[in-house]
Length: 153
Image (cartoon, rainbow, N blue to C red; front, side, top):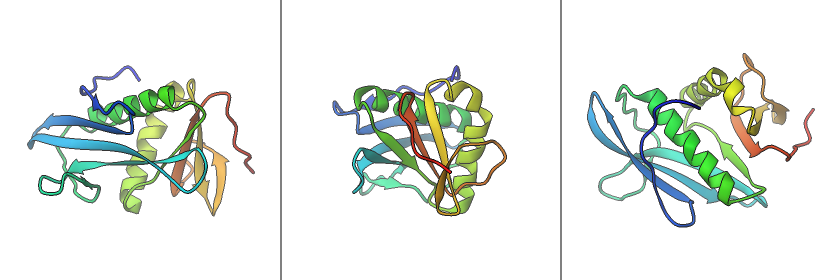
């Protein structure tokens, strides 16, 4: 995506990224984290504000900092970096609630033509994975760099 994005700070493993959202509500530290799941080569993408007390991700807070497109572009750039280093992996993402999942879907729809050149994108619907289509409602998303396929219906 050719959009402005924030500078990412990453651990050497590229499993954890931080950046600062600058907007109408000031500077907000954000975290992007890729966690291994119990499924081989599947990582969960966790994203949210950094809790100032615990240092952990708070994925329930609504920042409304006025920079959502720049934040989305920054998260996508972290997915690019992670999948470049971790070859042959799937990245699973869903929102902490249905509203947030819908916002993620809107973002995918908006930039689908750009992102699909590099990623296979799937959506979870009725308990099954399907190739992502605009204007379909999904409960979760799964992406993988091209040349990797998921059996779909």
